[in-house]
Image (cartoon, rainbow, N blue to C red; front, side, top):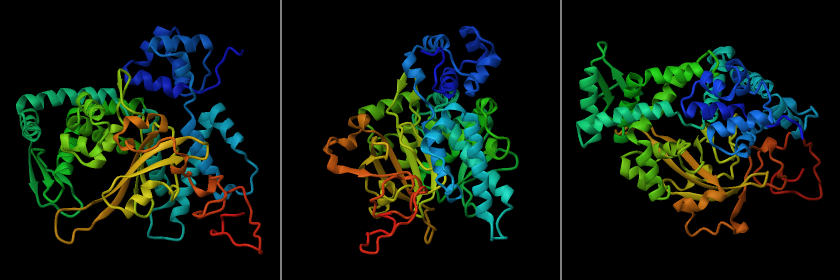
Length: 470
């Protein structure tokens, strides 16, 4: 047996270290290596010997096998999606080649994705002079994907922000039994800040006065959105140090990504402030992840609860590993995160068979699906569509659908699985990531042929879909 392990587990070690608020120097000293060597390990630039693997596992109090599990599934999926693009149609690259790249050289793999992101951003602007310059669009697209990767790498769990939110929440609860009243008191006493509802220009959710003494919140926002917006600003005031430390320790590119990260992390703080970790996890377990029931307890929206449910990854008290996807009615994926193992598209719309799309046909209702990916893994998925828009006549409405799910092995922990025969193969819906990389040939909903196939149309018969039989 080789004295080196093959899986690239640097990201997992970095995540465990950050979750426990341990510095690189402290961990390196405990393991018996230099901080610079640990940095190379965390970025998958050095392989880990069996002896080191056992030391890391012992330090974190987990099984070596658990630590050694490959952490490159999302990277492989993203690469396969990229190489499924038409520009690679004439290459002979295989799925195994892509896996080898992700496993053996993840740095080069991510650089390849970075290059592909820029290419897609540039192509999006061609032919429309009203658009931004290609480099600007590419930078923005790169930053958005970088934030998605950043959230994934950290398992959407930031312990320092959880602790910061707990400290502020204690002060709020001492001030009043009402969270809103306590928040008002806290902001006034600590920052001399008042907040009120006002008529703000269209598209503005909140506005801070020039002297930073008055926070105006749009009076047409839903109650839960208005409160979240106020807590988001509270996060920028009370957790700025923690937010900057997280960004400084990250590998985010130095373009728009840090600014976007500040906004995302302030939102994380707001969520943790409104839905504190321990009572929220308790409610999830007590109500078996009944999103609407939990939302009622915390006075939050369906989407806010779904987001919070994906962040329950404290090593000492974990929730069900979930995935989340949000899409608009045109199929644009605006949020993606996966702990369940399901692969969510990076660049293109997902498979139309996903219930996150069919949910638009039944507004406000929970849609349940047993979804099977091409690799054979089955996931239990729920989805619900909803709309956003101000409380006023003729307000423009935005339509979204949010999907939440877990691996089939975890499904019984969700109330939505009650009455569903999880072993009934007839209920399983074959889905994919996207037509270009989906191997299922006999699919009536194909929008494109697979990237590695050519047309061989039989004139004696006609399939329901032009691409269904190639």
